[in-house]
Each structure stands twice: as structure tokens, then as C-alpha cells.
Length: 590
Image (cartoon, rainbow, N blue to C red; front, side, top):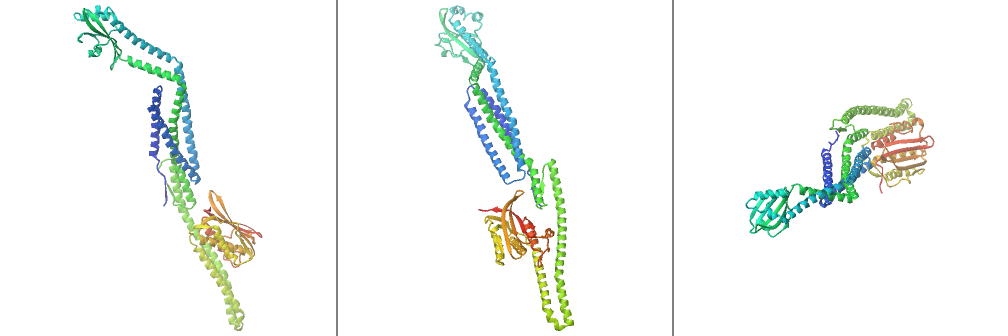
């Protein structure tokens, strides 16, 4: 039993495509954030990776889709079952994917454009400039305070008592200048003689700043920023190096940098507004296109799986129509289509069983009919044989001297009828034992010419015309059986035209129900067929000829049917008859 296997759903392929779609969505989120955050610097590495992913991957997808489209065109060319519906479903899925992605893309880009325009018009730039200005003024005020503090002429007087009453000195300084965070004093030998305030500002290595004065470079640590001012002062007839400092808040530098970066980004957006929208649009297209292509590729896989049961049913129906009732469809799903397939398989099983019984009954009936006809045909010559024998016997008994007068004619009648019986049984044997065809690729004109040449030599009064037949037309058939077909047709045509007339043979290629056939016409200008006999001329043992057996056209019909062909005729009394034969697999070979 032949089984048509329905392949399982390609879960791995579908899952892989879904994972790729998810990956693309993640990439869109990551790179979109990257582009938005780096629009002022136009990060080369990030954008390069984005472009590689957005260009190479779509090219691969387009190549795969083109491969599937080429296969679809081949299937359409070979008229495979379900191909038209498959084309419609793929186009439908692609249209739905485009319909879902295109408006979303346009709305997203338009939203970004509107948002940028709103930000640019909302005074954000002025606010950023003001914030940055305030932070710079704050920083500069601290620097100015330190400079004034260390240049103050009253500072030496305030610092008297640094050795005897250091805490009192520090309290006075803090009272007069509360912004000072720490104070550190070194003598000429580099020894620290005074330190009060926040210990985070303490200078560990005096040698680095020993010979410097004024504002020192800002020192940034993990959580703070330190501003220092250094000055040389004489306190109580002794020289000292005085280091005063202010510790800025831990988030001051970060906020200042954020303000500077934001203002830079804002200025870039303001300057390259149109370019930014264009970049975002291109970016959106480059990442939306692969998703659209993946959906189209996914539609090919899903369409194959959706149509597979329908295609299997169509194939099975064709096989059943060709007479193969052992065909079955294997379904692994549990949906409505599986119920239909199971019902179809059950129906085919019942049809196959019924067909076997029907074929058996038809064979019995056919052979019963042939046996009756054969018995009738055998009985016909037995009557003259019996009468001739009785005549001889009667003459022998009543008048032996006259035997010579009737002996020759009676014996001749017996011999003729025995010959007819022998001919009848010989053709019956040929009809009953006609072998299965063994087809080869044949040149139609050569086969026809071979048969026509035999009958052209028999009589000069019959013209068989084959000039219009192309010598490039080929057909797949059994050489001996096809030759037998033409021999019978030419013999019948010659008998129909009574030994004088013309027979015209034509060959063409035709298409029926999507299949190509070689159509052969054998036309004679003979007596034609009476209307009352037209339904019987292919019946076994039916003949209108005096010495015909009635098996010639039956053999022709059977050979044509064994070649999956079709035979019919057109005839008009007194004008002639045309026999038509369609044989499949007709081709033209150059």
C-alpha cells in the first residue's frame, strides 16, 4: 500500500524565525538608544555595527526569499497542486505584514519629529544654558573667594595664635568666611604646623606645591571636588605657607558635565534637526525591513504547512481518478482537516473494495458477452458446413453417380467456412492475449509511413496522404501495438472506400485539461457509417462487412486505452469517416 506522508510542522524553522524577530526588536531598542545618546558624537563603532546588521542580514533574507520565489515559479510552471492558493496566501501574509509595519513606522517617525520640534520650542535650551551658567558662576565664586582669602592683608593678624590657640583661630576664620572648608599651614621647613576643617582636603605631600602660589588645579576624588588656594604670609616674624580650601558637593561635577553634555546635544539637535529625522527614518527602515522580510519568509513556511493537507487531498484525488485505490494520506494533526482526511481514507478504502467487486463483475459480464458473441459467430459457419455435409451424404445414398457434381462445391463451402472459423479464433486469441504495452519514444510520422507503405503496395487506386505530418512530433507508445492500430485503421478505410479513393492522415499537438496530447486523424472519403451502427462499431464481433470478424476496431480501442489515450470518430453517410486518436505525452523534438 502506498502512503502519502504529511510532514510534521517545521517547528525548528518557525522558532528560529521568531527568535530572529525578537533579536531584531532587541537590536532596534539597543541601537535606537545608542543613536539617540550619541547623536552629538555620532559614535562610529555603534553605527557601524548597526549598519552591518541592518544591511548584511536583509541581503541574506532577500536571497532566501528569492530562492523560495523561484521554487514557487517552478511549481507554478509544473502546475503543482495548490500553487495558486499558495501564491495568494504568501501575497496575503506579505500585504498584512506591510500593512501592519508601514503605518507604525510612519507614526513613530512623525512622533519623534514632533517631539523634537516640541523640545526645541519649549525653552529647554535657555533652561540648559541658564543652569550651566549658574553652575559656572557658583564655581567661579568659590575660586574668587579663595583668591581673596589668601590675598587678604588681615589674614596674618587672624592667624596669630595658630600654635597657642588653634581652635580659636579656626572659629574666627569660619565666622568671617564660612565657605572655607579647611585650612592647612606649613613652616619654611615643610612641616605642618596647623590644620583644621574637613580632613578630606588635607594635602599629604607639601613638596608638590612648595614653590607655587595662587589657585591650585581642582582635585577630583570619588565623591568630592577640592579647590585649593596657596599663599605666602609672615605671622609673628615667621614665614608660613597657607593653604585654604573649599570642598564642592559630590554631585557638582557630574551635574556640570550633564548640563554641558545636554546643552551640546540640544545644540546638535537644533542645528541638525532635519538630518536627525532623516537618520532616524533610515535607521527605522533598515531595522523594520528585516522584520518584514522575516515575516514574508515565515509566510512561506506557514503557507506550506497550511496547504499540505489540501495538496495531499488533491494528489490523492488525482491518483484515485487514475484508478489507484491503494493511496492513503497520513495526517498527524487533530484538527478539522484530519477528520476530513480520515473520512477520505475511509471512503477510498470502501471505493477500492467496491471497485474490485465491480471490476470482477464487469469482467465476468464482458467475457459472458464475448462468449455469447463468439458462440454466435462460430454457429454461423457451422450451419453451411452441416448442410454441405448432409448434401454430400444424401447424394451418396440416393445417387452416387451424381456425387461429382456437388462434391467440389460442397467441399469448397466446408473449407471456406473452416477458414473463417480459423480466422475468427485467431483474432479472438490476439484480442484475448493482447500484452501490456512497453512504450518507447517514437517518431509518429515514421510509424505511420511504415504502415501506409504496406497498403500503398497493395493497390494503386488508393492514395494515402501523409505529407502534412511533421517529422518532429514524438509520442510515447509501444511500437508494435501502435503499428497494429494503423494497420487496422488503414484496412478498414480501404474497405470503406471500396478499393478506390483517398485517405488523409494528420497529426497535431493539443492540450486538454492541462495535459498535452498527440492527436492523430485518419480520414477517408468512403461510404461512411449508418447512424444506427455508430454506437456499436467498437463492440467486439460487431461488423457490417461480409467477411469481417468485428474485432479490428475493438483491438484498436483497447490498445489506445492501454496507452491512456482516447479514440472517437465522426462519420456521415456517403461522405466519409474520420477516426480521432489522442495519445498523451505528445512532444516536439528539435
